[in-house]
Structure formats: C-alpha cells, structure tokens
Amino acid sequence: MMTEESPSRMGDQRRGDSIHANAVDEYEEHLEAPLLARPPGTVTATRTLMNFLRGMIGPGCLALPVAFKQAGLWTGFILVFVLGFLNYHCMNMLVHSAHYLCDKSGKLELDYGHLAKKAVDYGIYRWRPHSRKALYLVNVCIAMLQIGVGSVLYVFMASHIKEVLEHYDHVVSMNLTTYMLIILIPLVLINSVRTLRVLAVFSTVGNILMVIAFVIIFQALIRPGNFQPNLPSITHFSEIAVACGSILYAFEGQAMILPMENKMRHPEDMIRPYGVLWAGMSLVTITYVATGFFGFMVYGEDVQGSITLNLPDIWVYDVVKVILVVVVYVGYVIQLYIVVEMIWPAIRRKVLGRYQSIHLLLEYVFRALLVLLTLAIALVVPKLELIIPLVGVSSGMLLAFVFPPIIETMTFWPEWELMSRWEMALRVGKNVVLIFVGIFGLVVGMSSSIDNIIRHHDS
Image (tube, rainbow, N blue to C red):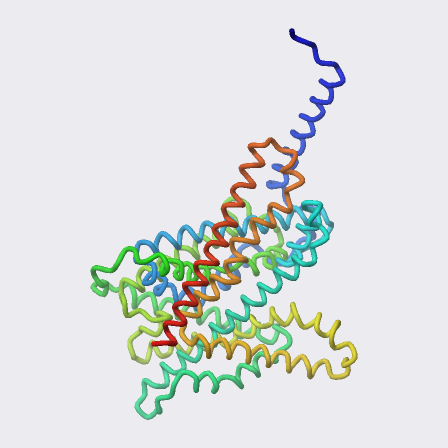
C-alpha cells in the first residue's frame, strides 16, 4: 500500500539536496576562482616560469642517463613521462589546497609545512589536535631532502674537480675522499653567508652559464652515428625501483612550488589551464627525456653518475665541468639555507635562550655542522648513481606522492562529505592509490638502494 510522504520530510529532503548541491557548486567554483583576497606579488608568470625551470633543471637532470640504464631504454622513457605527470598532478593538489586554506584561514601565504598544519586544522575533526605534528613531519622531510641534495652536490663537485684536474699529467692522482676534504673549507665559508641577496648576482650569472653548459652537452649527445645498438628495453624490478628514485630526485620540486606561487603577481596563473605549472613541467619532462634517452643511447652501459663525467677529455668539456662546479657551489648554500631557516630559529628560541649574546657564533657553528653532515653522507655514499636514488626514494617519495594526496584529502574532507557517495569515493580512492604507490615505492626503492650501496662497499 503506497503512503504519501509528509510535507516536513519532503522539505527536509529538498533542503538536504540543496545543501549537497550548494557544497558541490562551491567546491567546483573554488577550483576555478582567482584569489581576489590575496594581495598581488611582484613576480610575473614568465619570471616564475624561468625560476621554476632554473630550480628543476640541474645536476639531477645530468644523472638521468643512469636511470635509463637502470630501468632499460624504453622503460626509462615511459617512467619519466609517468612520474612527470604524477608530480604535476601532486603539485596541483598542493597549490589548490593552499588557495583554499588561505581563503578559509585568512592567511596570505602558506609554505609546505604550514599547509600541512592548516589542512589538519580544518580537516577531519578527530585529527585536528595533531596539526603541529603534521607541520614537524613535513619540515623534517624537507630538511632531510635538502641535506640529501647537499650531499649529492658535494659528491658532484668533488667528482668533477677530480676529473678536470687529473686530465693533466703534472697533477698527482688522489682518491675522491681527499678531494671532498679539500673542498670542505670553501663550502663552510660559503655556507656562512646569512642572506641570499649576496648570492643573487652570482646566481643569475650561474643560470646563464648553466644554459651554455647544457647547449654544449646536448650538441655532443645528438651527433649522428654515436648511438649504441642493442640496448636493453627493460631490466629487473629492483633496478627499475632504483631508477624511479633517480627520476624522482630530478623531479623533486614540491618544496619550492608554494614559495614561488606566493610571490606571483597573479597566483591563479600557476595552475590555470596551460599555466606556469603545466608549461614548466612539460618543458622539464621533455628536457629530462632527451637527456636520459640520448645520454644512454650514446654511452650505453658505460654511462656514469653524471653525463658530464663521460664527456671527452678536451678543453671545451673541461670548461663545461668547471662551469657546473661553480654553479653547484653557489647552489649548495641555497639548499642548506632552507634547512637553516626552518630549524635554527626554533633552536635559538627554545634551546639557546640563555646564550643570546653569542647566538651569531652558535649559528655559524650550526651552519658548519650542516656542511659536515653532508660530507659524512657523501663519504658513506660517494657515487652519484648510488646517492641520488637514495635521496629520491626516501624523503623525496614522501614529499612527492604521499603527503600531497593526504593534504588534499584533509583539506577538502568536509566538502567531500556533502557530495554523493560515488563522487566522494572517486576522489578519496584516487588519493589512496597515490598514497599506496608512494609508500610502495618508498619501501621497494629504499631496500633496493641500500642493497646497491652494500654491494658497492663489498666489491
């Protein structure tokens, strides 16, 4: 027997449908809306794109031929595109979440760590008391990544200085450890620079020199008749996992994307269709594919930890190596500057309050200890083809694939709860898959990288 629903029940259902529709509409409108409440920055979209390319194309790019060797020619080719797309998607997540939380919290800008904190503050209710732990966790991973990158740059500089100097007969051959110790004092001195303004001019000149170096390197790679035949298309699973670490190291840009977006004149240009992020990641991915593909095609199984170490022993390529050492030397202090800015203020405030009169001296000691830490890691893992994957699959994997979907889920959970079950399941399911991929890559990549390091030391 059919019964007629009461007017009040029908009214409640209509109000529920209305709330659901409004929530979905507001969520979708947010994804397209410009950040009208935020004051304009000073950096144009074009300048931001140039800064993005400068930050992404560096020594990690020069190590990609080894990743192609580890994964196989065509497997490496596919991996670069796949990981490039996933990195682009996860960076998009971070910027969308930052836009939403800036509007909701009234903050003008958020870095990666404070974005994680605000996501927990406004996310699932029972997790809100743990928001500061989220901030600490992300910042620790960023600090670990920057120290790992500093160690990679340390090995890069020592390897290239050794390569250049020992081309000449009158230079006595020394082991890599000796060169690492020789450059320790210069690195301690440059890491004593307390403001990046001092390095601004050198950084600009370094960017020009980097472009020149890449042009010279590519003209050596794309000459006809240099390619080796019968290169493997795919290798073993463990080697592919290590290759993913090398590629992720090159792609790692999650920590810098939000500071760049914060300074843009029109922040919405970062993630609009065909905007800064899309253009930047497209150009970076194409550059990475070309470097890895042609580098492995030319040098095959003999390819070294940086493609520059395979270049012929003539003066023009020695100049390229010197240029890269100078560029990396200036870039080294920028990597550790991020660590100092994150950690030192808390140490000075909470631990060294009674020593304010000598806090400047203690800061210099802290900076020197960071350099010694990168030296220690470089001494333990002194080969670029070993240290780069280790950095990429550890903190790099967490920052690239694990934290962004968690942050997006926490940020938009209250809105997603008002959507239909299928819409919510689709969004949450996609993020769960990304988190699983990141954790799986972390475990497999770390075990494979550590196994390679142990085998290297035993041999």
